[in-house]
Image 1: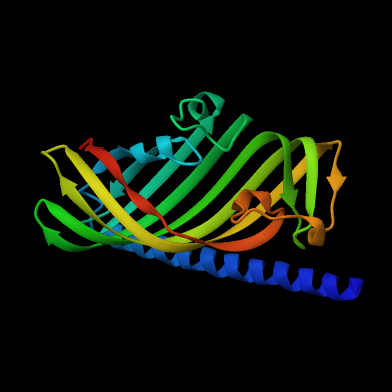
Image 2: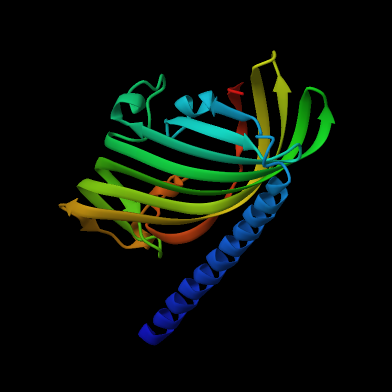
Length: 242
């Protein structure tokens, strides 16, 4: 049985490695094609803009996110984003939050956009996004579930969730005036999550057959590694610098 679980874990790690290898290869090819295309426009710099994502302040993981876009030419854009959240932002939530204290989240995102539809000055686009996110918090008087769904109760515990993935998105950038724009987007993606619970105080283990599960358990209660689908939807407010 131990050999079976070891081989199964080995296959999971191998599949993750192969998947990330292909993702990095695709990202590299896209960036290279953008760089090649940009050479013919070297003497004509593209537009640089900044943007923010207001909806994330009321997200379940509340955070600020700031990004920049650089237009390589009329068709291609590169985008970089970074986000952060902490207890101060978390306590601003009107309806409260799942995070109790010592909440901290950081994220990094990079995106390649191909503009397809144009109705000057507006345009539609397709985008490929890669991201990495890490969230930490401290919980009190609760429980979490292992891979086999056996609950562990605790007085206090440290929580960490690492998430790495890829999204394919479609969107539309609408100019509000000569400088300001709003960017609506939606898409579908896949992320690999690794959730850990550490530094347990007074842990109590219970067999899963004796535990009465809630109708819906939030994803953060499941310790371990797993893939989960992503549904990125939102909008960004931006400003063209030049």
